[in-house]
Amino acid sequence: MRRILVLWMALCVSVAAVAQGVPTTTPETVTDSGCPPDSLPPLSKKERKELKENLDSYIDLWKTIGSEGSNPKVTFKDLNDKRIVAVVEYESANSTPDRTPKFVQWLRVKALFDASHQGIGLNDIFDMVTRLGMNAVVHVVLKTQQNEATFIYAYDNATLRHIMALENYTQAYIYADMLATRQQLPLQIDDSLFVTAVSYCDHLYTLHLHSTAADDPTVSSQFFWMISNKWFIANNTFLPYLGQDSTTLRIVGSIEGNPDTVALDYRPAQLLGKEPAIDVDLAGQYLAMALGRECPQPLDDSSGVWTHCSYDPTLKVVVMHYTVDELSILANEGKEQQLKPMLLENLIYADGAEFLGLLASSEVGLELRWKSRTTARRFTITFTPDELINYMFEEE
Image (cartoon, rainbow, N blue to C red):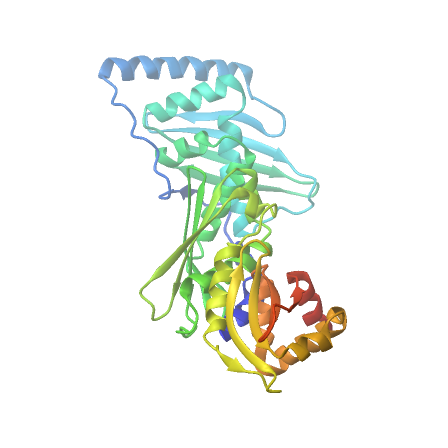
């Protein structure tokens, strides 16, 4: 279980980390292979001729108008049988244009999204362009207070249709982030953790994570990824955008030397922090089973036996069951709050700190239940996940 704890801080790194330095003057082609659009219906020669004539008439109107919108301002530049060319101008309050790869990907998606969504006229123009199987080129002019930067992007027909099908800026941002991440694959986010693939299609965002750490046979792969993913989601600033888009996150995890993969899905409410990003009951069952392997075990003071472990789905606690002398229960009744720190110290002293950390990270509490050997008398002490977390922080 040790390597689970090692990864907690590593997983706080966003998958959108990027390198520096991307040229902005050379045309770049956007190619998407994650969610291919539906095939275009074939056009007869007559249909193609009529559609092209209709497109030309719209272009003539666009030329007459001159441009659409203000920020961005979209202006026609050129048209032939293979592609349409437009100029999209933005004015930015930033003093210097951002040239990081993530921003460049966002700008290339946003520019075409804006150009193809600027009113009914341009929507119709780009729709006819896609139906004719043509491509697009967008010259982006980004004006700031101090200077001006030009970006030129070329889009194949499939990507043109894909971006036009995006419904809003949130989807455009998610799509752009996916493209930026793909450029860096395999993306290392820790000494032993890599993003190896990413896709976004039909409200499903899929990340493939691979761990090169030595496989630990005492930890089930599913539990390993449940814990890892929970912290990854809690500390990632990009994933809430998926929740805003009502998109499900699927993390497919693999570990070096283990042929099996684990796929776990996370609902929008989990990505937005409205629900736990972990299956609490499943985690509790696993932890109870793992801890129960140590049972039965006599207590050090010979007062009784630690008999077994279980998971209580109603209370969301792993339960440690003890059978002890009745005098031990009588001596402790009414002292629950006094005993809590001492009991936690004893667990930590007995190499239980890692287990307490796993309980807390799984949002599972701990309950100790004693019962008398000779009567029905019982004694219980319960620790909530918050109590475990707070105590461990105080001990550091």
